[in-house]
Image 1 (cartoon, helix red, strand yellow):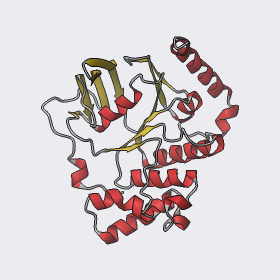
Image 2 (image 1 turned 45 degrees about the vertical axis):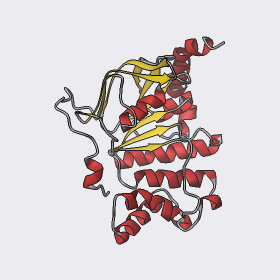
Image 3 (image 1 turned 45 degrees about the horizontal axis):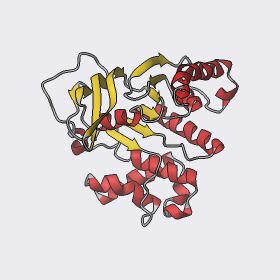
Length: 277
């Protein structure tokens, strides 16, 4: 995998050092937004450490700050109080060691699959020959070799997600930030994409923060699950998912341990759901 010096230096240095070996640390973090004359507290008192190579899923009611947590990790927002550290250094600028994927694939319609995957490589100034080799590696990785010259309009929903995932991996981010990336897909395609993401993250040894509203998805993918309260969001439950590190996402549907974990997570979330009615 290739990574540029430019990518590695986008976290601004600071004298503050992390007291543990976590990749990501939230230390007493709260975020407040201004809306005209009003202030809206999105999150409060978030304290959590994320270890390298973990897939951490994040669930909770709408508007509780799940996406805010990703944005703080990416350096797109700054905390109002507290600190967010990446490998021991407070994040004070865009965090180039992370890659971000949302519900929308944001593929450029006038570019082919190869052209879309090339975008971050072009921005980082990679030589044309190196870009070509890297794109070939990535389309093979996500199973799009036969569609490398296709345009987004010629791709199925699943293929578009694969192309977006390949573009995300293009500059080899250490940590993947995924904000409901499969929410718009049908059930069968969603399981397929979950499987591909899970296998890729294991194979490439990525750390993953994955926001979802789908409880089944949170348990199926996660090594660990963070449960947020309603706004202002804070972590009310942080638990390890006691499933094998290597697992079949499809086969889990018949696994009694998995079924009980999903039921337990429903129980944890049900008070916040009932409060809405």
